[in-house]
Amino acid sequence: MKLTDIRSTRAQLQSGELTLPDLVSGYLSRIEQENPEVNAFTQVHKEQALLRAGEIQQKIADGTAGPLAGVVMGIKEVLCQKGHPATCASRMLASYEAVYNATVVERLLARDAIIIGRLNMDEFAMGSSNENSMYGPVRNPRDHSRVSGGSSGGSAAAVAAGMCHAALGSDTGGSIRQPASFCGVVGLKPSYGRVSRHGLIAYASSFDSIGPLAGSVYDASVILEAISGHDSMDATSSPETVPDYPKLLDNPRSDITIGIPEEYFGEGLDPEIRQRVMDVAGKLKEKGARLVDIRLPNLKYAIAAYYVLATAEASSNLARFDGIRYGHRADIKAVRAQLKAEEAAIAESGRKDVPDPDTPMIRLYKQSRTEGFGPEVKRRIMLGTYVLSAGYYDAYYAKAQRIRRLIKQDFEEAFSRVDVIISPTAPTTAFELGSKVNDPLQMYLNDIYTISANLAGICGISLPAGIHGSDGLPIGVQFMADAFREPELLNAAQLAETVCADFTDDPPA
Image (tube, rainbow, N blue to C red):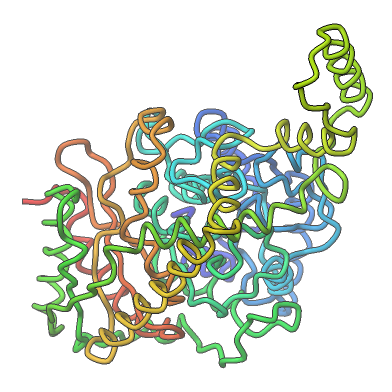
């Protein structure tokens, strides 16, 4: 049995060839074997998962089981799950235990999915390598010396290593699709508003999306259908009807129009990845697709606009974690002692030009946030605070908002002519651990092909397209479709998955 194949698992459970307790035990054994090195799971719910497996097995026997009975999943640490720590991989929330379930978690449980544990991530979802975590880095299951991608690196690695059927991640600028590309799995970012964000600890509220990572397009469609739909707890949640995504994949249309944007195939893209994406497009053309060259002229501003707007929202969202209202609190006794020592040193020096020390409250705020946040989170908070500050708001934040509108208009124009857009998911395959952690600009450029979907609020998916000839690592191909056009997106991805099967063992020519 393929551990990541939902369809075959369901068939085996229905026939009695497999029992749910045995399935969960198999995944637990796999986690015990793989996780010490990969470091994808931060918590494993062994007893809870086995107990639930027994209960749902009885429901299967009674014919009352939900549509996700037999699906074993992991949940990214950024999503609240009642009774379990929701740390965001940050010392700031190291002692926080969620008191309610995120809407997506509620929907999975209501459909009888089994949640086997919680998954590592970049701290507060800020990163492209899953090296910014209090739990340590997630290693790529294909090569433990390489990164898994971020920020949903634990989710992608868990699926790729066969530790669960599927996982939930979050995508603010590519954080589902980029790690999916690096680890060789499917990662789907829904349209903004398609999936409720209630219970997602926010990074950038106008960008964040929750979506599935899975072993196939079909598996991703099953999870997407389960978690989609309106939620009164999220004011940005759309009332649009949720289609039967898995059923739409039974007979995918091949006469689709695919846009090829020249802006995604320029300088900085690995030549083998460029060739593989064009190979996929060529094979789809052979099946009846029409290829159209398109332009997205404002994409050259996407990285700059994104890192202005996302960091501004992060600065605002993370202001609540001050050690008083929420989050890690520094030792007040140590803070007071530090202030007294500073006052004594000033008095002893006799200098009049030295500023007075902070008040105990101000110092407590500073010390709590200094201890609680890691370097990358601090960097983004400071960037966001700067672009929102007096005198710089119009020069940076307001201008970035205008560019965001132009980028959205570019996509609207493109989707008036094509059904989907094809592109690389990332400019390279998974890079070595530690190779970019001290170079923020190079790290940020890993999102160059994914952040535009978040800026425009459209949907996107990454799926594996074979291996790279030089390093033997997975290559990802990305498709994007207009907002709430997940049916067209999944249709194209299903067709591409079929042709990509030919590339499983062969590097690009």
